[in-house]
Image 1: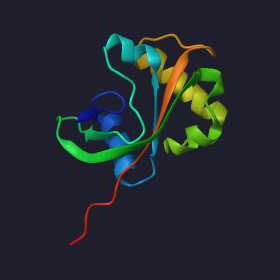
Image 2 (image 1 turned 90 degrees about the horizontal axis):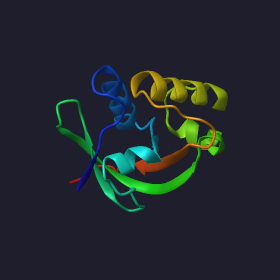
Image 3 (image 1 turned 180 degrees about the vertical axis):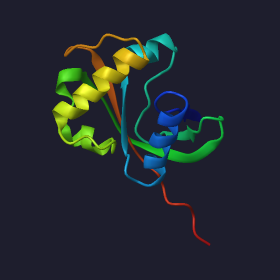
Image 4 (image 1 turned 60 degrees about the vertical axis):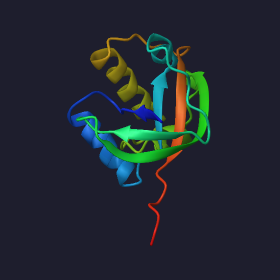
Length: 128
C-alpha cells in the first residue's frame, strides 16, 4: 500500500491530517513535477493509501475517488473547497497555494504549471 503525507512535516501536517480525519478535507493538490522527482506514479481511482502522521504512523486509510491533472489556472472552486482548508474563494485558494509552494517548497508556479488534483474518502471503519 502506498502512503500519503500531506503538507510539510510539523504543525501543518497535523492540521491537514486532522481535517481529513474529521471529514472536512476530501481532496489535495500536488504539483505534477513532484511525482517525477520522487519517481512516483500518479494515484488512481480505487487505490487505497495509508495516511501518515509526522511520526510515520498510519492514521487511516483513504480510498482515491478521482484524479485529474490540470494547469494551475484551471483548478476549480469545487475542488479547492473540497480541500477543506478554510479558503473563502478560489482567489484565496490560489494565493495560499502559490505562497506555500514558493515559500515552503521553493517552487515557482504559474498558471500553466500542472497540478494533480486528488479526491479521496475516509471509509468508515467496519462495524461489529
